[in-house]
Length: 223
Image (cartoon, rainbow, N blue to C red):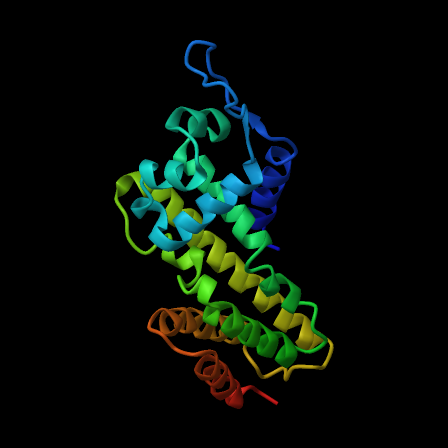
């Protein structure tokens, strides 16, 4: 996918090869207390906290409670809240929304757009993912301390949109998409419909309603 996406996935791969040992002294460790926590499960919980509450909204207490660890263990395992967020984001991109990358393999530009919006509707209408899109939710508001995170997410969305543009340009070279079509505008259009679907899903739109929205949007697709 995009460079930010690739870098995050590489980071995720490097850190998830083993569980992290939580060290405690003999005086404080209770008999039978587990010495390890499942880093995969901890990242899943952290991802859902960031997904629901955004970067600024996710407090240290929220994260450690969901992950089942102490603050000291979080910093020892992940370094900082921002580094934890980056790994949770990599997990999100490679998991719940991996369908966006898969859609690019469709044989035609129209099929790419159709599958992107159809899969987006199914993803957003799922009761377990009603929080919308993490890349949007986590960057809408925040203080100066989270400016770097917001800029990273904006860059990620723009690069994802640019990946769509490149796919549509390829379709034009292959004769699948009219030369008169503006690949950049089409990529921006598909991205905007997805972002609008996110808001509609949070508002309670059903799967049928979201699918219909995608169908209406594609009626004006260039022949």
